[in-house]
Image (cartoon, rainbow, N blue to C red; front, side, top):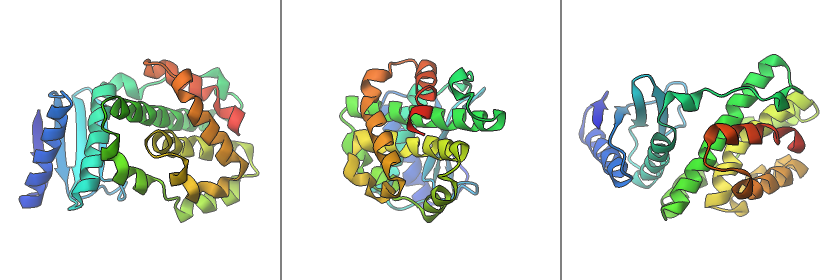
Length: 228
């Protein structure tokens, strides 16, 4: 394990040490941790995971909310364990997405893969009795943004736009429902009947999804149209 400090100071050091501790607690040693000042493209993110030819990498930014920091680090550490290989960033297109244009099929596949991997992380943490660590992150993820509300208002009457938004909302539902329950998702009530469709699909995931991430992405891809 290696920690790369792109910023200096006591807070950065504490964050790096906490990241190391959590990874070791979960039995992950072959990852690189980057402590950064901010994420320019994703300013709302606390941490993120990537995997490439150089291995598994966790990026964490400077914040002094250690409850939220720990929640995000457990989340990304689980990704590192479950999805720490570049193969988990490459998925075959499913014929089930052929109701979308070619460009939107690619976007939908990406969004479904993100949601499935987050569900697998939730399942992993629950199986290890670590669900309580996720309360701050679940609370943060549960608040629908103004942008999401407006995008739904503008796109709900177009099937392709609606499908992409629902695939994006899967990430929230697939993570929040197993770890927090439906009450956390009250701010997504603007989805109307589609809220119920997403919620009911999420409840079925334990019996639908196995341990093969690629197969899981195929299965959820084939269920997307059923909720659109």
